Amino acid sequence: MMLFRARPENDKLYRFGPITIRGQRHVADLASGGSSMVYLAESEKAGDLVVLKVLGETVDANVEPHQIFERFLQEYELLQRIRHPNVVRIHEMGIADDHAYIAMEYFPVGDLRKRMRDPITPDQALDYAAQIARALSAVHQVGVLHRDLKPGNILLRNDGSLALIDFGLAKHVMRSADITAAGTIFGTPYYISPEQGHGDPVDARSDLYSLGVILYEMLMQKRPYTASTPMNIIYMHRNSPLPEMRPELEKQRRFVHKLLAKEPRDRFQSAEELLEELQQKS
Image (cartoon, rainbow, N blue to C red):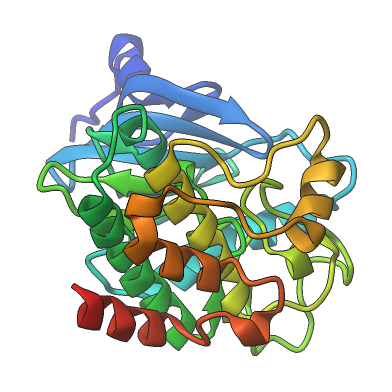
């Protein structure tokens, strides 16, 4: 019986940095940083382009290696439970050369940050906000908080639909022991809620605050709070007045200001409540 021996030149097709992943052909490097590397690949199984997120060896000095691995696995486990058109599709997860990887949907159009380089009409902004709210509704219904909602984590398909990605900081609210320490601040300062920025307990209304920041930015082409340091931005989220908006955006202002209320009790109490009011005002 003749055994097939892979040729070295063929092996190069499956190389992702120092890692070989059979069945995934390397197309391009996309990003590297933190605890993972991201590549564009062609999946032999799916017959299409996918994004490969590979857990690297770089570790955060403030986080134990096993916690990074737990977060990586948690991202896949969470997404497996969420089947929704506005949430990224996961194709598979595997282990190669002692590195865990996730193969997920590829978005050739890019993210919402890229889309926001061009003006977005008020009606389009509300449509995008509704799609994000539908994603959050699906996420929150399985007991998950995203905790890192921002334009870079919202991607666009060719048909104009949005999908929420990157659940690496997500937290299952029913877990008895979270993998992040109590009082630890995670997320991006421009988009986190006042309670998240101060390390206080958070719930679904914190993600809705982040959606309010994004909606404001889509409408005004700037962020509601900016400062020279992250801590100053966090301070402004809790203490600065609600941001002003142009008079012609009165319809949208109501949604933005309710989403950006300093106290969670003054915001929309759920993504479903927001969606219901958006539908009534459309």
